[in-house]
Length: 130
Length: 96
Image (tube, rainbow over all chains, first blue to last red; front, side, top):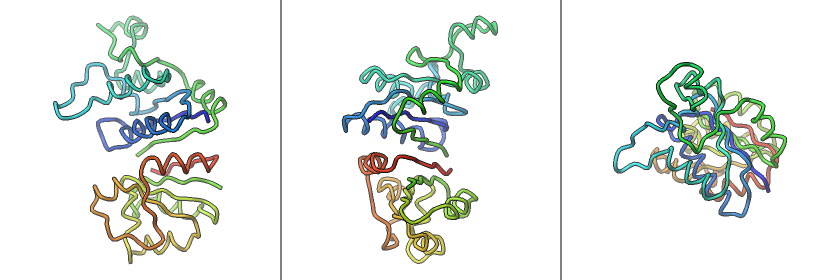
């Protein structure tokens, strides 16, 4: 079965983003495929390359990046939400004259069309909010 | 058949809206602050049991919140249990 995930919550507030990552691990462990994880609103903060986690905490950015690397999952962040939260790739950093990109290389800046595509291309779209 | 996931307290509008839509054949998974709706003897748990939907709670979230006295109709599941439910139910409605 093909899954896509929609993550709406910040990884730095509450547990929804972490729960989504755990869900993704479990989905792949059960033999399913994850087509895309789409990050919207504060969920885009999962891509924050410059965030530093406490030594006894797993970095949410690293966790998602490893998941994507291990299973070939696309991590897409909504461009409008990303810009509002200061999450810029090299192209956007140049366009808006910022000193440097702020998102981890594992993430792709994308548009809402990719969320619609994820819904159309997957058997399941599971949303994590709150 | 809809799989509802509730990540909001019983005092929230999300809880009220969720309950108003839930129907027989649906399933509800309580997670995050939603776990408080499973406490035995509360108005919230009575309301949930009157919906005739199947009720589940994420065990880790319940333990983290100290919610151990569960209403009889609520079943504990882990993450694999949640994935299994998504395999069964073609649609999910997230309440938060």
